[in-house]
Length: 430
Image (tube, rainbow, N blue to C red; front, top):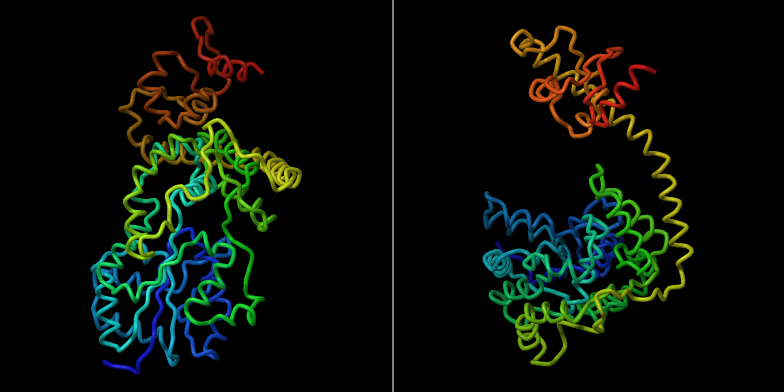
């Protein structure tokens, strides 16, 4: 299979370098790109709650990592990306995680198809990246601790994959086909920098309407403080991660223009991260920046005592407090309704299990003939709240303790010190 000489740019991230903004821009103008002899095929039709998507490269990633991968299927897929245009773009952060073997398949396919393959990769300084990842964990993964405590527990192979990704690419492609950009230098105009890199300098000005606000900015100090408090006070509650994400989305969507403010990063954390990543940083500088001190571990971060926080500089405390207060009041108003639904669902599940499983075994279970499973969990709230099987609890413990198991039953209260017993007897006597 062969085709007229074409150029395919694979935008492989890296993560947390404005990839979503680039992908959103390209997806918005995908139908217009053909007028410039450029193709952006397989753009997702839907976006997530933040307005971002995974880019148009997911079909390539899925095929490369599939058990039924074939070279012919990959060739056909790459042809579809190029379409009738001379140039094409394929973008996905997932490319940051593929292996040298996957890159070899891509490179060999491009040679078979007479396609000039280029890879574009933005690399970010380590600690600014980690601070951004920490904010992401606060927003979406229920993080409760400080940045320093998070660094101590971080799964490093899952963070700052930039060096790992670039090593996989560099092992296969010639350096002339790898375009590495320092994110710090172009973070304010990442879309323009990408377009300039691929030869579409004038496109951003023409299609300026397609440049949307940032989707996933870092948190301000005030937002971080509020979200950490929500995460800490939601411990043990159902839907705790969704709760903090909901508030984070409200805060960011209401004020997408705000600049994130770094959390405190102690000298200990800086030393830890430097020891872990300095060799990777040096390799990137030597390989792609001619040994210059372009990429660094620390970046522009100033060491701070681990108990300090950055003073808010956005002047938006009142707006942030107003949004958070409104969300909290709405949340409080819905607690009773949710609690009622959760209680009814739990009681229904208990009743169904009792009817389907225990009633056929009733003669052998040593249960009283008048045992009422719903009354038992309502009169002994510790059993209900703990999610314990009420029948097994009554047989193993409750019967010996003399626990109440039906409504309007009157039992001696002497010797009962359990709070749930006191409540159950009061309920019976009221």
